[in-house]
Image 1: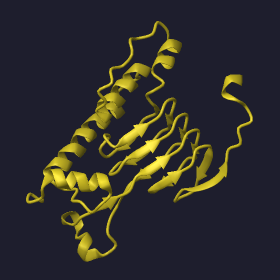
Image 2 (image 1 turned 45 degrees about the vertical axis):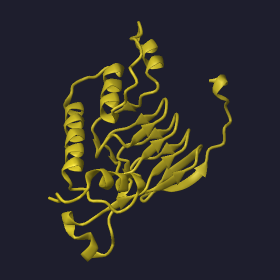
Image 3 (image 1 turned 45 degrees about the horizontal axis):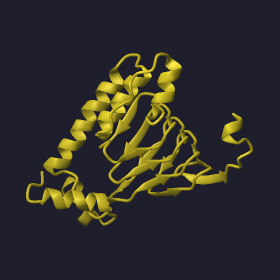
Length: 201
């Protein structure tokens, strides 16, 4: 394990998408924290909408308090739209590099390697078995050097009202809003034409 790395600078490099070291004590501890939370979430029985929101708040280290509980399931759904609806299991590396908009659905067995920021816009639907890989490794094997070498990453930005089809692998870059994405690696299939206005639904 690397111990002679300035942890603060190493984290800053990671967030900037520069070469950094993933196996420092700080980052190993951050992934272990996330792993414990995700394991607990995946093993839990039936969960309410609020319990899912509480998990997301803890995972992302959000300091924004949850709204007061609603009287019905419908009220709870409306109050908690800022938090994603998540089907389990889910796999996440850090959790603190995830930014998800209002009314987002994440289906079964999705994976988030959130080395850099993974951002998903409002009302986007994510199909089952979708992987978001913001991290990468050097191609040069001598520089890569197994767990002793550096890695890097770049942000993933998904726009609003997108549909990410099942079994897609999303690599760093942008998906514009109102688009359908499919394939492995992901590619834009087409732009969605808005035929129904939101106030007509």
